[in-house]
Image (cartoon, rainbow, N blue to C red; front, side, top):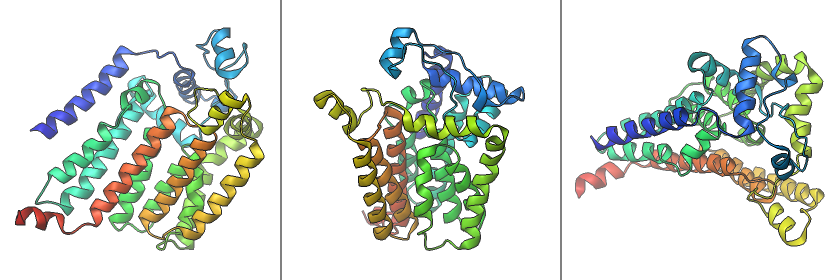
Length: 331
């Protein structure tokens, strides 16, 4: 029963994290909670002002502005819709991420259980990889949303491997509309060998259906919160990136032009070299994201998301194997 105990412990730890930290001192928590409250009451979250937990000194340290405001909803609408649903049900948006991480573990277990029915430990240990990913509880307590994006990506892969024709691409559209950096997976999806025009169009139309109502609601606020504010955001020194290292050593960041040119060349190289398999497109997208984080802005939750995708790639490699059960029986 060790697997059952460990899954139960993972759930207890997450519930304890939420209950013993009901009001974490981070702007993201209050932003997401406030956005959900706004949506429930029929107000536009992209036009709202949210509770600011930081003192002027903290604002200066984090944002180089002593009068910083918590007034920009910096995620795409899929995240808002999901967190609002769980906020309405449970009163705390972090239950979204508890469901997401256990949903992800269930997908891993379901994929590998049938494949390796003679050796369930493979499915069990693979599921525990995602449940006990380092910093999982910290990421949950701080209300970072990457677990939701991971769940949607895993669900897309699960549905493709189960042979569904069009539903996976609706899910992929939801994945793209959860957080801006993951939009980079769209050009890599175009390289997928099983893709056709209908599937690609379905992905795009899902993305548009999710995003368009909020863009129309207040176009200027939406564009500013989601894109412009992110582009002009001055990266803090606690960002784990070469840009931060350059600031510490040379008192200046890496020139933006140099970063853009490097990333464009990397994108073109990856698009040319991408294997047109499911693993190939996910691998290339992950390499680009990791490079972006290392060069420009790499916070703890960003690398948590990368780790979750690497586990997905491990699971896909295990899924391809046919010899493990036979080797187990032979020994």
